[in-house]
Length: 139
Image 1 (tube, one colour):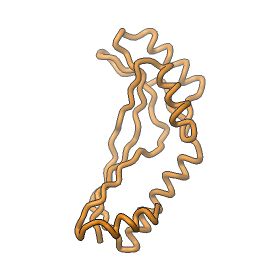
Image 2 (cartoon, rainbow, N blue to C red; image 1 turned 120 degrees about the vertical axis):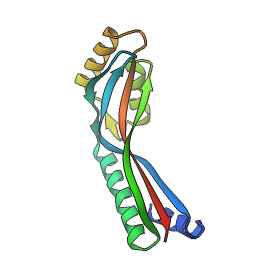
Image 3 (cartoon, rainbow, N blue to C red; image 1 turned 90 degrees about the horizontal axis):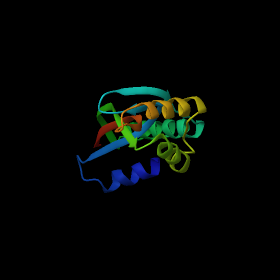
């Protein structure tokens, strides 16, 4: 990632802005949401490889700052919600797309399926992720 940041620094105009936008693993919340209520049904399990990737990205940004390539102007965290029509669709997505980074244990699966089955017809299964957005100015 340091090489990519070096290349971004090379092609970015003077005083140009780099936006660092990425999810951070933090045992994201699993929920069942309807128009009436949102119920927390568990949390995902963060896998070591994803945690290492987050740490490596953080180190790369810090290194680019210490190299003088970019100056951190602002950084904030915000929630971002992924939503599926059913717990089954959510479980399939996790298994197919995020199986290297997070997992959903049986207890969270059962609680989510149960809450969804007992909820209103408009209920959806969702993950509430932790997102980072940072604004960096070219140094």
